[in-house]
Amino acid sequence: PFNFSQTSSYDWISFLLMGVVLVYGVLHYQKQLNLKSLLSFAVSSEINEDNMPSFSSRMLLTANSLFVVSLLALQIISLYSEYEYFDQIFYLQIVFTLLILVGIQMIFLRLYSFLTDTVSFFQEYLTAHSYYIHIASLLCLPLLIIGFYVPNVKQVFILASAVLFALIYFIGILKTIGISGRIKGAFRIHIILYLCGNEILPLLLLYKLLI
Image (tube, rainbow, N blue to C red; front, side):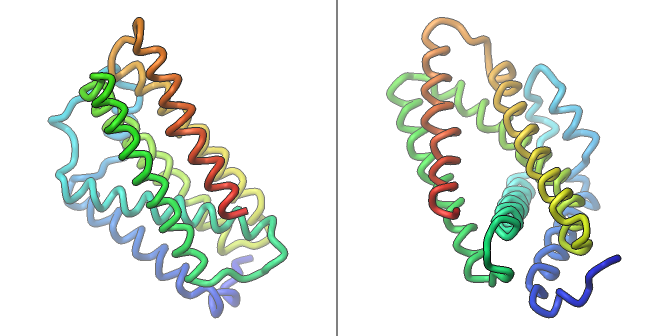
């Protein structure tokens, strides 16, 4: 049932997947990545900085999450596009589009948090929310691999991966609001403005740019 014949035109995706899996394996071997600890963090009511990976490990996790999310976007586009093949250039366009959107998010958030004196709150929020993105990327990866190599069930597994990622992503938003601190008074307005301007709007922009 596996469609290895398509790898002649998609070898670069196979190598990308092997690289992503290798990085996860190295981080796990170095005890910088543990699914159990990530899941325990997801249900925790506070941020324990002592159990967080090193800076270099966090950078590798962030890169892996970027590649997985970009690949997920590529696979979703391929399902509903009239084109059957997307090359590395198009994939890199997705990667750089995500990087630009994230960069704009960071600039807007840091400026907004500075002007509203909510720097510490949003620093904790971003730290916690990034872990939910890593969890979503890690859990979606097996579904992406199956969807890529088993064309008969590609649509089912790609859409399941998208739904799983979106579910964890938005649960992460709600959960990390609680982890970052109690929402009282003006913080409610800050959160509403943040969600509209920094979470929902970039997704709409990404949709308009890529679809």
